[in-house]
Length: 286
Image (cartoon, rainbow, N blue to C red):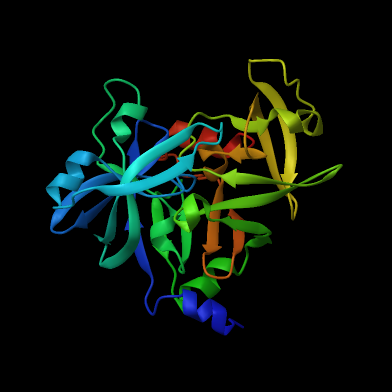
């Protein structure tokens, strides 16, 4: 039975947002602001949604003030902001009290296709959503769709993290170690194919913190969800980062009001019409 808290986080009708592949490793979504459509990376680990200075000018915003955030390596980012924006997509209106103004193209490889910004979980605050990376969909759940969605899913413990004075929103998932619980960011924007582990936890994952090349590791998210693959160790300000490779096999449903989450393993496609790369990603350990 769904509690009042869940009901408050659920829409009356489910809305599915179609996502588009970007540079073969991450996904984007289209949204309209003040009558102008933009193309934005969708990034569960982005924290605060951002738009470019050019897009801010297009929609009639004059950036002001300052927002300060930190990347997982501790690098400080200072940027201006636009307030009270509404992103319209697939019939849904997503309200953003504060959006950063930062030129994302300067953070991407030279020659990367144009983006107008990056949208994170902050614009879905208070809602229940499902991210299906392989299916290229992002669903705002209704009461009925939520019941169906979690019927066969496994609940996992998470923390909702609100950095940048409460503006940002990300999800950390629990990972048991021999010394206690580690908390790793779930980051669809990390399309590099490797897990990232803090150097101070390297021994807990049988990794050499002095090696620069990727190393094999295997562990479980609390609840028995397996994670396996290549990992690098870095000097981080958080325990670790689980990236897009994991989401190719697991569908994430998260209640951003109550702070609960569920994972459902995606079935490997048997249809020969599926691209070989999709089948390989499904069959390869997360």
